[in-house]
Length: 282
Image (cartoon, rainbow, N blue to C red; front, side, top):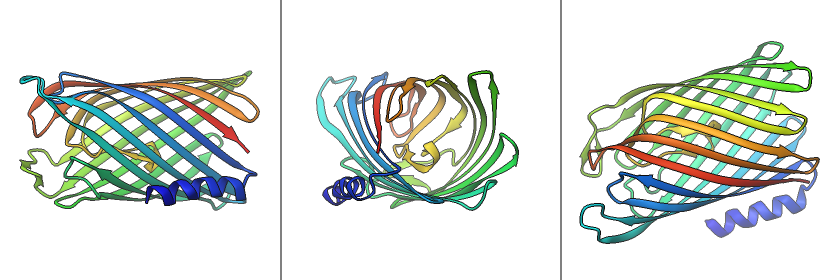
């Protein structure tokens, strides 16, 4: 499966060079107060191609996390995760667009191995610069499912050469099922809200964001990513800085999350991720 996807990414870039963007990201992870997770690295490769009113995106993500029992100090097998994603966007007109997404998970340790996430949704422009969005995601795991409903509203505006975009996001998450391996869910309904602010000044870009309220098994990044481990996140903060050139972009990102490892009953677990991404436009 991995070879097929990577071959498709490369072939797509060759056949449809025009209006194509390829992105490679590399990042490091650091965990604090986790029962077993210590640190790790992640790699992403994504390709998107635009043809008329259609946009197709394919992605591959690989995570490796070193593990050691925090009490016994015994070394444990590393966590290895691979995720494949695909997205499709269709612009119906200047006000409306529709989208669909898919994620497949391969995990060597978690009960959510072989999980599949399906998404549909769309955006509608109410007025100039004011856009609403609604997305629905269905996460299909072996012993339980997750239904997620996202609503967002965004406003773009400009101050001389400074372009700004502010977004408010709400996520409703319902778990359908009782078990994650030997763990029985205590909470199965979550609601979280978030804010994002992006800025572009003569090609220099920056973004800040935060999520508040407990959440678990969350689909993120417009259906491109999912948190599939039994981790109940409570606080999330994000920061990005970068520069856009004519055919080349560079972006640094940092995220901080605090939450609870549910099966381990471990509170106040911090997850920090620092990444750098490079994009090339054909």
